[in-house]
Length: 291
Image 1 (tube, rainbow, N blue to C red):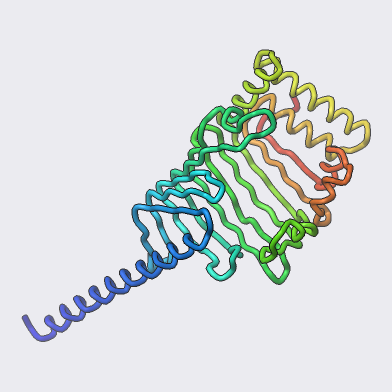
Image 2: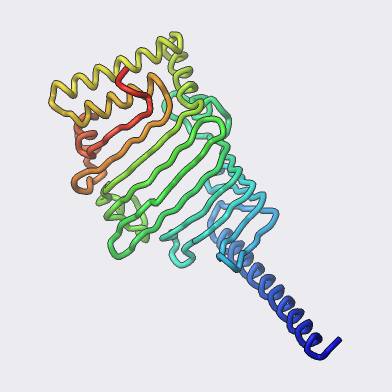
């Protein structure tokens, strides 16, 4: 082999060995840091099959990840991809991560219903994406997107902004000044509304069709009351909710208050009509005209 050829071969081999060593070093250091971070949270336990760091886009991928949360809840994911994560602050000021094949077993109780009973399933199964960033200077939390696409129940997407928030503070008193600047929630139904209507029918001891008609009638009555009170925002929002209940599909709820609204306002004696007007809520559905 000519000298030039030997040199090129040796150089390429050297680059490959160095790159492999760099990849091994980065992965081992990230895995070490990750395990230390998990160990630093009381009650949190995480296991995974593999952890891999991409040097190109600096993403961290965990496969077959399983976690026991401090509250005892169990969560698992086929794949967890972390695109960005704040490692400096105790409460991360930014996160962008995606979980594929996520499984969450609900154990909470909502009113008289077990959550699993109300949802019509023992677990939530799907893909989740979370992307938020907190600005410590302006104290604004921007939720770029939080989405969960459940294989059975439906798809949910939430975005918005919260002001006067202190992520570095500890205690409920730090939330006193919290204000809602904007929010948008979109939900596309698969089977959730059917499960909720079935549970409602069971509680009210009537057929599912009769239960749906009853809920629609109540929303219509509330909308008419708001209309008589010249609260058009509440009237239109309630009519939109009624359309969705009558014919579930996709619903989008958008809050765009003129000024950020302190969340404490919702606990100061205002009724649902005032609260809907306060946050300037609009409701859009793909259910067609009012039915």
